[in-house]
Amino acid sequence: MSTGVIIVLIVIVVGVVAAAAALALRARGATGGSGLKRRFGPEYDRAVARHDGDAKAAERELGERVQQHGSLQEKPLEPAAREQYQARWAAAQELFVDSPRQAMADVDQLLGEVAGARGFPDVAEYEKQFDALSVHHAHHVHGYRRVHHVVHTRTDSAQESQAGTEEMREAMLEARALFDDLMSADNGGGGGHGRTGRHAFGSFNRQALKGS
Image (tube, rainbow, N blue to C red):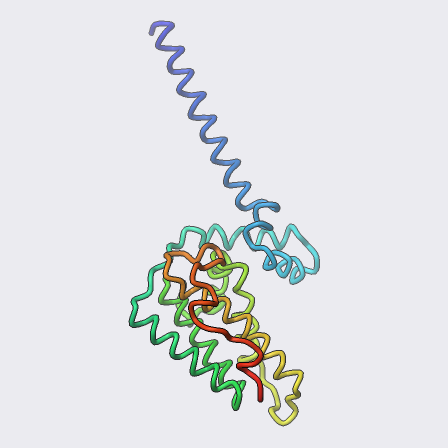
């Protein structure tokens, strides 16, 4: 083997090693502490709080979510399905005035179904679905968690206070952000910044929910 060929082979090997190292560093940046903070935003802080301030444990959890669900490709919604989902949200919004808990249950089910239609895990696997949503819609997913928690927490309706109703109202407002994100006409929602946003589906504010 000539010296020239050996040199070429060495150059190729060095290039392959360098490329592999670059890919490894990029992957580490996506799942490392600073990368996770950027990707998950407030969800990162909530994960740390759930782990009693243990950032390393929280980062392991979030890193696992990225590894499991980061490659998920969101599916577009059919126009007819989008219209049905919009109508169901509007109905839940109106129902909130007279029956906030039932409205919350309807929204919880609706968000799960829309997420499933966009290609996320089925609504029957809430934890898995939530983890996947948190990877792609981290800035808005907390509303879904709040709604789901209220729906699946037993409460004596006779003891339900105005403060409880206010909490439900705030959860609905936050959940609306995720709904708008999932209803976005683009194919991914921009990691929590869907292009259509609130303006496309109307205002959902305190005035619309007053009287509960």
